[in-house]
Length: 336
Ligand code: EPU
Image (cartoon, rainbow, N blue to C red; front, side):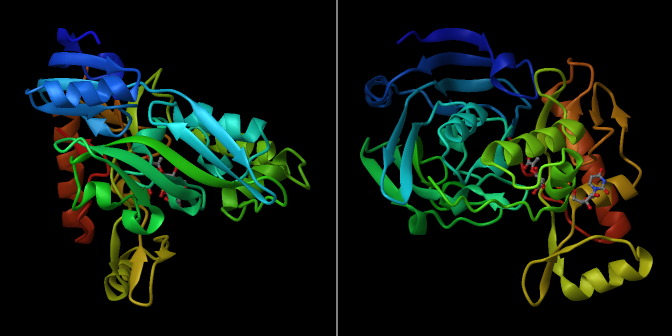
């Protein structure tokens, strides 16, 4: 274990924000993680893919970069249980599953980040959420060092939400995640409009797991910037959920406002649409900006943006959306 001092976190967060950590250590196995938890007295700051965070200041803590690797597949008659270590790159893990003809995660292709952080915000895209295939995860308690198994029911999964963002926030470090995947008769989810259009464009009539993954990858590439080229953290805000009567009021002013039903009384309105309508698409603020193909994505426009600049832009957008539509936008990324 090599604890380093005064390390730049630029390459450990997908916004590419250049802030320093007082101390930094990369962890490759769980034994080292336990030893670190037991011996260390400094405050800890856990980072894996760094794809859902905005760093607005130096991190005065020991940054623990989880880099544990390994995938185990157990095949049964009708399904497989697949366990991946927390540090596995999410997209590479999904592509491994597709290669092995294991179905369920293909719609979640190309999401940045690592396996261990995926349950925290119940990642989702194109009609599928992590919870749909999730069986359990193992996690170590930071103070008691006890390992705990969280089964699906324990996790309180919701829209970009879980127990790890609520009552046990910052208490556990997830070490591995197990998924239940199909090995035959895959239940492909192509109902999300753009996937069907994309498959039709490629003349695919009976899609395979790989076809669906490739359609998703093509759609994502057409809208979402590659963090290796243009720093970003995917959707910056959650899609707000509002009462139906508020949506009816919105429709009076904006008859084309899209929505997704949530329950009898609630609808979800796409934040990207609200921000786009407000005129922010392609907007530049200091070194930051709003992506010109998807208004929900804030970017490190020049590569030199500070986290504070991106946060100022986010607050500007929140204020404008509130004044225009009376809707509160909540950040989806974690701001530090
Ligand atoms: N829209 C606009 N202008 C924009 C962006 C979107 O009018 O600039 C409209 C679209 O035309 C569409 C609607 O808003 O009618 C929704 O847009 P889109 O399908 O692109 O999805 P989204 O709601 O913006 C969500 C997730 C994404 C996920 C996609 C696909 C959230 C916060 N975001 O985005 O997740 O990939 O659906 O399922 O739920 C992420 O979490 O980082 C992320 C990228």
